[in-house]
Amino acid sequence: MVIERPQYMDKLISGMGSDQVKVITGIRRCGKSFLLFNLFKSYLLSQGVPEGNVIEMAFDKYRNKKYQDPEVFYPYMIEELGKAKGKRYVLLDEVQLLGDFSEVLIDLIGMPDVDVYVTGSNARLLSKDVVTEFRGRGQKVEMAPLSFSEFMSAYSGDKREGYVDYATYGGLPAILSKKAPSDKAEYLRDLYDELYLSDIIERNDVRDPGNLEDLVDVLSSAIGSLVNPLKLSSTFKSEKRVTIAPETIERYISLLEDAFLIRPAKRYDLKGRRYIGTPYKLYFSDLGLRNARMNFRQMEETHIMENVIYNELVARGYGVDVGVVPSTSKGEDGKAHRVQLEIDFVCNKGSKRYYIQSAFALPTAAKWEREQRSLLKVDDGFKKIVVTKEGLEPHYNENGILVTNIYDFLLDKDSLDS
Image 1 (tube, rainbow, N blue to C red):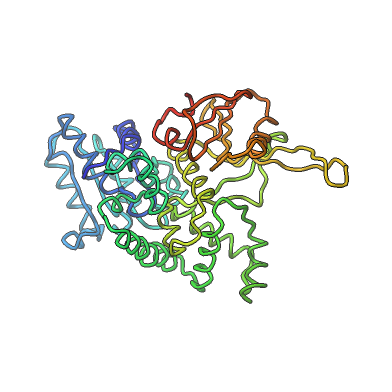
Image 2 (cartoon, rainbow, N blue to C red):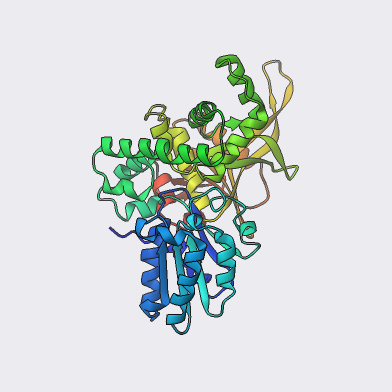
């Protein structure tokens, strides 16, 4: 089963010939190795690159263990590069297993006609500081699990069945090869416990792994909710009788972000045009992993759909914030009170901006009014959109708001411009 990943391929292709290390990052098991050794290599060969000019190395294979020593790998690579003429392409998988890898790679990209592409799974490569790691000579290609449209390209059922599976078991490619729900659930549980959390704990010398795991559980049960490290610290103290400093909670959250397990959405004051430090929201980059951590309990469709929309927007290359709009509302005392209305997502890419509300269901006029209220408080002319679970074909309502359903939104890459 081959699932094309065009948006990532486009980035690799556009980076060809640059004097930078192309570093494929992203959550484990999202398809980085397949992208490099299958899709990208096939592209190179299709463009007439001789197979001998593509030099591969997977450092996690036992047969290649000796090459983890840079004193062994470097002479080998120089020899292999010398056998080919013209442009040569070096593809390296799990490069963090190579000793002194950053120094070796910087040396390689300094050679004439050598183009270097790598994947890696350690904290340094899978972090926001990848460019720094290569002294400003790294180009990051950040991968995500399958988008819904990619998922459906290999799914045998219809879009509604597919959405249920996708929202339940996520978009890690291996999920599509597993048929029984129990097999999918077991795969995700094992992956989370034995790969993700263990790796974070070991690599970062987490002294109280139980506290980290408890925090993961709290965050898993609160997707789409506001997160405040100070309040979380108080909750741990009052409910679990455990003292964890807010700074420690912030560090743990940062470790989960650097492993791409969760992503933040900061709050942005649209009137004051400034970011609000805390609280902020966190979303899971793969809902299957989140759901497995919760043992497939707390399957609130409203929050899950919001997480799906967030992931889709990030995958399309948008910067995503939570919008805050100040307003006034008459209280029970008859007086006007200042309130903050929220727009689920404010999406920016270049000169484009969209305001998006996730509304699982809109059964009443009152519900419609609540969902539109914050959008109508913004008058800058950018498009406003409401995404529902089910509904009519995409259309504009009487207030000029685009109303669409989750399936059209996810399956049409140009849905925001419809």
